[in-house]
Structures are given as C-alpha cells and as structure tokens.
Amino acid sequence: MNPVKNTYYVDLVSGDVLDRPAFEENPSFKIEATDEELHELKSCLDESYTADMQAYIRSHIPYVEYHKDPANDLYDQSIKKIYAIIYKLGDAEARRFIEEIGILEEDKFMQDEEIQKFK
Image: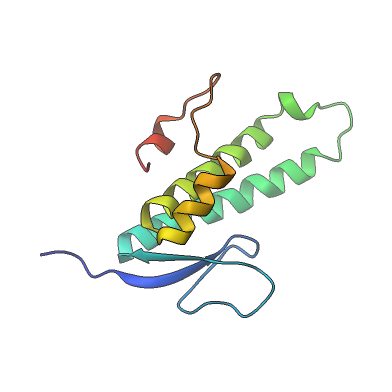
C-alpha cells in the first residue's frame, strides 16, 4: 500500500511549508509529500535555520574568514539538501527551476553523498 501524498508549498524565504500557496512576495515550490517526507523536509529547514544563525553570529567576528568557517559550510550543505528534497518531491516547474540554478550539479571539489541520494 502506497502512503498518501499531499500537496504542500515550500517557501524558502520564510522556511514555511504550507498547505496552500502564499500570496505574498515569496515564491514557493509545489511538492507532493508523505508525512514522513514532510517531516524530513521540515527537519532540514530547521537545520538550515540553525546553521544560518550560527553563520550570522560568525559574521560579526572579523578575523574569521568566510571560506574557513564550518558554520557557513553547514549552511551551504543544508540549502543544497533542501533543494535536493524539493527536486525529488517537486512538480515539473520546481525541478526546472532547480536545474536552471544548477545548485545540485556535481562539484569538482566536494560531493555530498546525502544530497546525491535525493537526486
């Protein structure tokens, strides 16, 4: 028996997952997800928020360089993971947008196995 998938709209600016599209300025991605998939996406959005706050705090320390900061690396990876999940669960428009921005393309210097499992 296949789990029931419901339609949701993911707003990456606010970090919300809604059951109807937002009529605000923020674009949203339309996805079809089971309860388990939705929980995983929400967990990733929470991780991204935490990493973003850590990077924000680090940004106020002038002697720590961006490219040597684990908080920024964690944030970058969390965003890639979110896009990978949206790519997997999203409609054709969501997948086309993600392909256009190229965020999930293979990186010559770093390949994240966790992101690859969603592609």
